[in-house]
Image 1 (cartoon, rainbow, N blue to C red):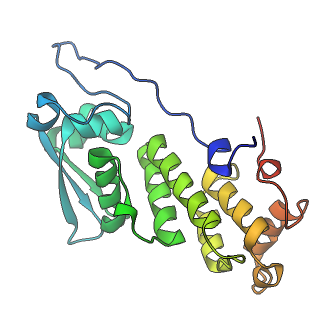
Image 2 (cartoon, helix red, strand yellow):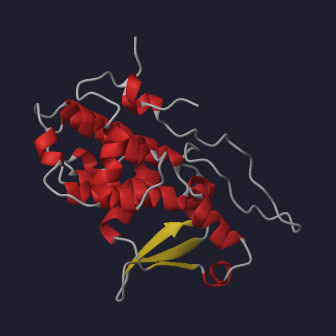
Length: 225
C-alpha cells in the first residue's frame, strides 16, 4: 500500500527527554510535544505571558512547564540568558493572535481549529508558526489536515497564485508545506488557472512541477533522501 503525502513528508519528532536541571538542581524544562499534559507539576507551577501581534498585543497566560515541554523556542527563551527568563514575557509582534491561539489549543488539548472548516491560509499560517517555534508534532498535524482537506474536496482545487506565492515566500525549497501544495496543485489545479499570473514565483513553481504530469501518484512527487 502506498503512503499518503502526509505520511511521506512528516517531520521527525523529538525523542522524549527527561527534565534537564541547572547547577542548583532546578528543573528547566522538557522538550517533547507528546509529553503527558496533566499532573500537579504541569498546572500548578509558574505562569508566563506571550504577547502576540502588534500593539496593543493580545496577551496569553500559559503554564511554563507545559509550554517548555512542547516548545523549544519557549524553553530557550524562559530558561536561557535572555531578558524573557527574568520578565517571563515573550513578545511575538509579527504573529497572528488567532493563529497563536491554535498553538495553545494544540499544547493543551491536542486539537486545532476545533474541527471547523478551515481555509488553506489559516492552516499554512499555523504550520509556519509551528516551524518558527520548533514544534514538529503540530507541523505534521497541519500537513495531515491539509491532505484530508484536499482529498475531500471537489475535482479541481484552484488555489490562487497569490496564495501559492505566499507559501513560497515563507518556506525553504524542501519544506513539507511547499511540497504538499506542489502535490495538490499538480494533481488537482487546472493548468489554465496556474498560468493566469506571470511572475517570478510562477516560473519557480512551474519549474518544480514541469517534469511531472498533472495526474501522477502521490509517491512520485516526493523527493526521497
